[in-house]
Image (spheres, rainbow, N blue to C red):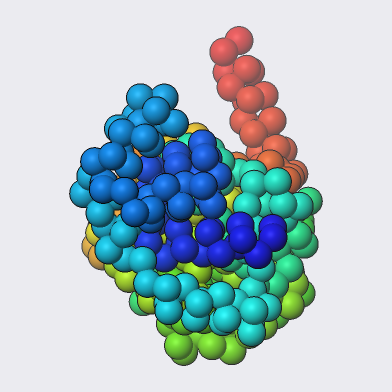
Length: 328
């Protein structure tokens, strides 16, 4: 990616909201540089919309969206973002780059056009990945389940993917880092503003074999919209998702919904009906048809790279024999 393209992609990351389908269409159809030049040109927005409509095969860009792009553009902020990216050795990648995770393209018009990366994203390329997500305030049982699932995944070379958040996500990432495995944290803001701050030491260690990634360039602060939007990327990157503990309404279950919508495997760790931190898991089970894992080894139901436990195969074979004998 040359300097002009990087400049244009960074500008788009600053002026467009995450998962913006119009920004995606413009960059895919016209290229980020030409699209930016058209939108930020001197012509009035009505004229710009007409010109873009011809380039977008009849898709008419809303004037208010084009106005929001122009209103958000700040040259001094763009220069600062580019300077910070150089200073922190952040790599911007797009489709065609050797590190580009093609799985995110399953998101269609809601796919990111650019990802900013710190670390070794290429290390995870040969590996399948599992998203381990859940409550920011898990119980001891929830933490134990997370570590057990991470251990099974790491034993079979599966990459641990999550959002770098407190609780379940942090436990999963730390287990990977401490075990010498590979882990990817998908963050909600620019990689110059790592959130939450108490995970600073984890964020320093993760890039050694894994990576920190974001669809936002530097200077973008984490926001509620950013957190919700990044969950679709977590789901897309992973072969399957396991929701360990989650409240009825929380960000973690949105990863499960995104995964289900993408046709990915989704599973939950069951908990008590009376535990509010399991309400979201049962919701995912009911509304998305998620699988229920009864033990860590059943991660094999979610991730093909994890072999099916021999004990389960033997038990199932024995059950089939008994049923067959009973039928006679």
